[in-house]
Image (cartoon, rainbow, N blue to C red; front, side, top):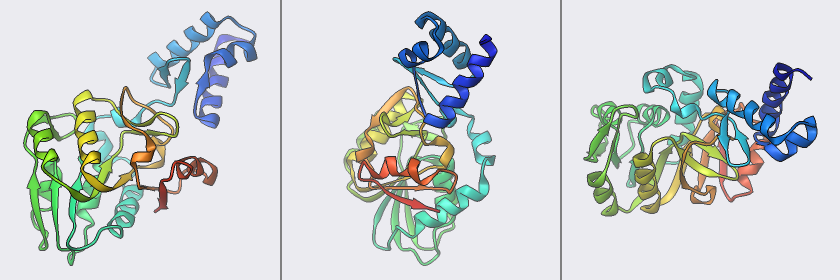
Length: 251
């Protein structure tokens, strides 16, 4: 088999199985482990997968620029946002994490909702400025421009003083085995603090982010109470998340 053909098979297997195991690949193709490692590295350099210890995972789509992510899958994000708002109730203290899908949740909050919303996202705070029934608190800290989110010591300190009823968590990557991951270390600290200080954790994610992994681990899937996603993933794939005790809501 030619190198280009082998690498195409690797990508097809990754799309089907959600992961690649280097030792299994070497045996299947009857090539050396070094050959497999070179294949995986070349594909990783091209942005087609993410290298991890022992193999590879799908690339993390959350690493794309914020402005690009804002324009992606608007219909799916709107459906996810509408489904998420049905999990929220008046009288609650709600944390809205930064992200383009959580921004859509803010835009779809019903006018009759009466709640207190805390966010580390200036765009979300702006979107809620005209909402008649919510009080908005913006967490301080250093602005991480790529994520449009506040991070750092001031953000963490403020979160430790909060006990929220619900956290609506923006997702970079979700994987059944690796868990919740992000591409920025400081963001991982903030998300971890948000999860620790919320009774319910509702992750909102388009299907393309499921099965992928980024560099920094936030926590296991068991930290989530709900996952709200679109219809792009099969029932079998979503059952892998349900097996961790996560209630999956399909928008």
